[in-house]
View 1 (cartoon, rainbow, N blue to C red):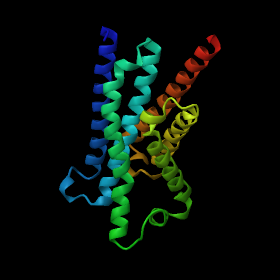
View 2: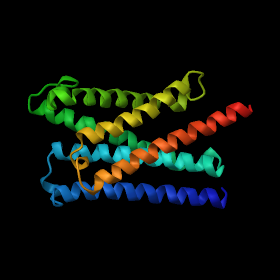
View 3: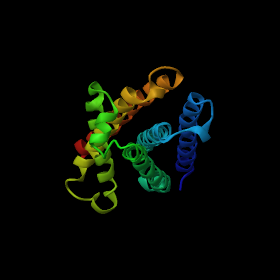
View 4: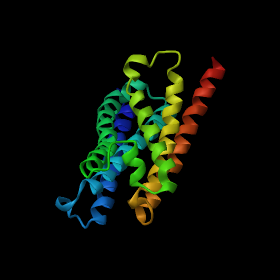
Amino acid sequence: MTNLARKLNYFAWALSGLVIALAVIVVGQDYRWNVTGLSAYQWFPLFGLLAFSLMWVHYIIAALRVKLGIDKEATVLYFESTSLVVLILILLHPGVLAWKLWQVGAGLPPGSYLNYVGQSLRLTIVGGMIALLIFLAYELRRKYSEASWWHWLQKASDVAMIMIFFHGLRLGSQLQSGWFQKVWYVYGLTLALAILFIYAQKGKRETKA
């Protein structure tokens, strides 16, 4: 591994630690750090914030890797390790809420999710469920990443990330105001720039080929 690749890996882990800390801090502040008194309704948003934040880091590191001309293999350990964490988080986020709603007699998803929010937010819930299915399908990359149709799922996962950005912005209590809302907007802007840059570079390589 080159020195530049090693530095990118260090940066990836450091940035991951930072975004995790920010998500924990904003939730902790909201509940005055009384974590032992939190219910499932208060825990499940944290899992969503952590999942999106780590996936955002994935996009930033991927864009930097392409920009710096670093081989994809150099960041495999980081991506594989944190992708497992993300998978657990994206299952916990809706899973904890589904379990709690079922426990109080609200039924099972998708009905319990749709009834949990007002009529005006139901489309946002549907978008979140669609994004979740796309993210879960993306976990098949180890088996199908070389398939001719895989690039469509890659594009779908990029769209899903944008959907989740707005899902959080509309539904997240920590994102309605305050300092973390500004952080979220930074995530959204840099995510869009990273996606555009990656596709632009792919287009250049295809043109040269």
